[in-house]
Image (cartoon, rainbow over all chains, first blue to last red):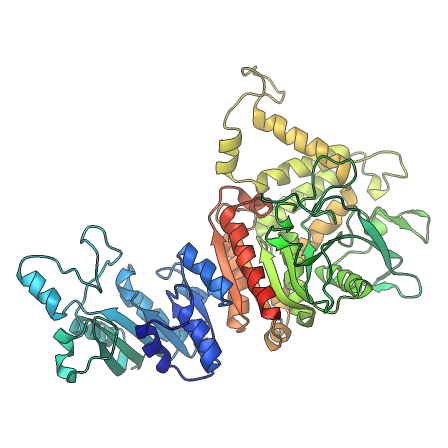
Length: 198
Length: 377
């Protein structure tokens, strides 16, 4: 099974043999890949019923719980890495979830769509809320509760005591952006961050 | 249901401990002889690696699936076990045994004490969850099974599976713990206490020697059952099933069983007397009350060092063992780095949901056990 491009990129950031908590793990593809290719162990968290069943069928340990309220179930420093892929924007209180993540593991890998992507800016300049491959929803019917540019996101990291160890801007197709770092704020469709405690 | 189940089955009995080789109980006493009633469904594979053990709940028995000769109702988990069912007997060898202290063929407090020739009664030793495991491990040896693919249990059965997986993880690859608890709450103990009081205070109880006295503590046992039964259902489930419906065409105020729910509970209480024993009720509920495996030193060490994996499930409408009980189990296992999958299944059926054919629940068991079978190949 080939891993989705952005997940393959996340997988490359994870050391072999580590213990990984994947929040919003979906069908568990990342964890299954990490277990098979990198000898990692770990757990997924997911609430979508169909996805949970696929994860179980794939042999991925998955825990059904509400990320906004129940991450306290996980003990301090019980994992090496916590992954949160394209999920922060659907949580009620992203800042509290980030604080929980860095409590659970010393390293956080997080990806999030960039609201500051140039096409979004153009749509907004024309008087319309952005819609794109990354954010294909009407404003009134979307799971995305929060919108942030990369700069906004980085402010939040700072506010909750996270430092950026690595930032990988991606194209809207989830591939590495081949442009200078400085172009990321408008050219990246999303970005992956490796974060640690300040 | 897509198939006709496992068909005609019989309960068998094995004598697993005798006076030369008595059962050592965890509280120090010994017991002999010990007979165990069990049933099996499906075929043990040549590699003996497809065995699944079913641990039953408080008032369950060895008859989990199929029909006994002439019986109308199938075994208590027939919707789960059979050809094409989640525990697929075309691929699995399923064993279910009555537990120690029970009254459905396995030695218990209403068995005859060979020392006196009388029923043990309250002279029967107090039991511990560990003793259930000891006896069922011996049954596996008797059946020539070295290692289980999985042990499954709901409620008290789930507690036994938890105990088994923590103390002898080498016996099982997968532990499936459904609607269980790792430590009863004050409310749980309170319900058990009232049930026992109803039995102990029944004038027919005679300090446990009711058989010798030719009486039965029927009133106490049926009241215990009626009250417990309320805790197995949810308020929503009872409202759906009975509402305020009258038992007859219309309400006739008085102290009879005027509402349908009253009549239902009376029936449950009565029917229970035919299949259950008051002493077993006392002994088994007491095992639940004292069970607290994570309080032991290095409780999870053995399981963490093994390759045992867990599936834990709870039901949102269960208030006897609410989801918080299962989450506590998950928390302990998870923090010991033991692989655990947890689902909190949305149901209206209360604690008894674990016995029902609920699609999301059965799909979960099916997905889990299918994966377990696949890993064998």
